[in-house]
Image (tube, rainbow, N blue to C red; front, side, top):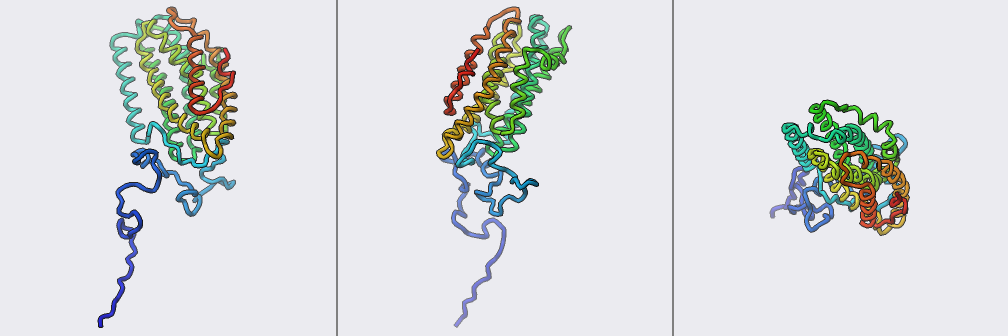
Length: 361
């Protein structure tokens, strides 16, 4: 009779050494994808940031000196029954982000190089040149301020998906601020009279820009990271950013013999459409949360009222700009009405009420 001897269990960390439910599956199955199939974006972002409530069995490995964990849900007044439910509509992660930024920079370089090669800046209306010098030069500081604020906000996002959306938003704002700085410097080399430093003086001292400064610095000073993200994209961008970029620069430029500036500025409008889609998706989920939706809507409406009043003030102080070009082809009242309607449409998508203050003029 031959004795049966069991083979000793082989302990190994090699792939395939252990068989378990789903071990032979060729699909990611540790999270629930938003669609029928997991996307590359989801594979690169879902659960990259640890969460003790999901897979971090030993709890947070490190924490701050006061006991605050590495990431805390208390860093925002908004609450969620599932923070991991958010998926950014742009599905942007590191590789796709760099690709998009590179494409935009290539487009801007082609526009500026071709414009300068043809001597286009020398044909700009002289009044328009001063507007670009003083006021487009001032506006770049608002873009930089928002970029810094949102950069600060992204550190506190509870999930990698939220962090990615906020971080790429910041990157686009900082890039556009740099785009404007370089663009004004380059066309300034082709003009007899052009002060590339005038924008900072106007930003700091010109009454036209002090409301915008206040609105920007208030966002920078907020201590709730989702308030910063909300205020920048739901309130400031449509009420001040788009108002100035689309309602003034892009409307007026061609009539002043300037066809290059709108192309440069258009990059920011495309950025905002992408950032806005992410913003609406996140805040709609929070406003519609089955457990915390009502409380979240109250918080967001409070933010809207607070920052809306500042942005309306900022918009109204920009009004004198519309009278400065020699050829006037757009009116402030039309631009402001479009901005007010834009805010209302955004808030309807999110599911919150719009205060009367945002339609005041």
